[in-house]
Image 1 (cartoon, one colour):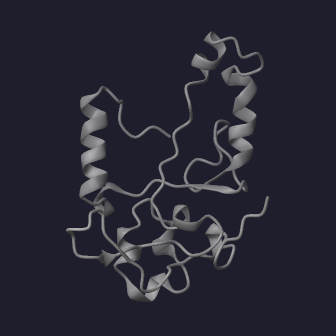
Image 2 (cartoon, helix red, strand yellow; image 1 turned 90 degrees about the horizontal axis):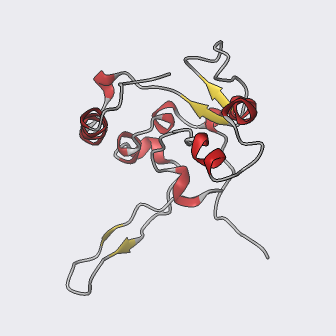
Length: 149
């Protein structure tokens, strides 16, 4: 099997700051920030009755996942244990989560890490867009305690 990706293998630290936000809209709307991260000239439609519209397609290793916003949420490992998965308790998997992170805010805490391949950061609420605020409101309404570390 062979997987070919169009474009470079970008590392998070090499990307412009605007692309490191979990909300990619700011970068997508900034022509100077997209550089070689987007395929140019793509247009698509959902139905034949629609006019074709620009399509934001990522260019590089990871394709469009490299330009989409991401939210990191650790899974409820207790469910795995209840299902009979041995070696998957919180204490057993936490070191793997910690090694995988490069946390900009809480790397000095024992439950977060520094230097891993997955960047983790929390944007201040002042910089949130409408989708960020809606997600926060929905999570709060569902009983989420707020912005945990």
